[in-house]
Image (cartoon, rainbow, N blue to C red; front, side, top):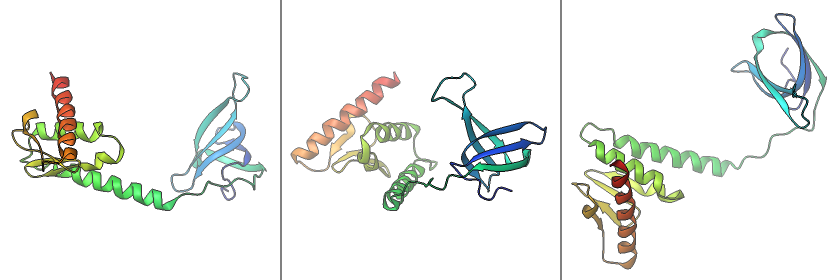
Length: 178
């Protein structure tokens, strides 16, 4: 009964309770057994639609009124999808290290703050390397995890600039806690 019911198709269907409905299918999931469709809004406003979700099992009969053969899904850039998936997995694995029993709560909070505050790809540059937090390329936060314990790995200008930036982020996290 659901063969050919895909996005862009206009259907009429009858519910188990006898109600007759019609609309354009937006989504149909054969695994989850539900579909989503839209109809012009009851409010009467142009370019406005009411969207409905129904389970397949609640439909007694369905008829395709107007097929839409021209509908196609946009192309996916699989390299981007794979890269994003790998990046998210690395981030989660790094976060999981923080939930070992001997990791202090203040370290978790600081790690989360830095991960969320650093822009874009730099978020991946926060790592827990017991007992230190490594931030970006040149900065390490050592116990007792204070602003003063934010240190650069070498004496380069870039390292000092990174250290100062991380100290500023660290300070903003500490001042927001109080």
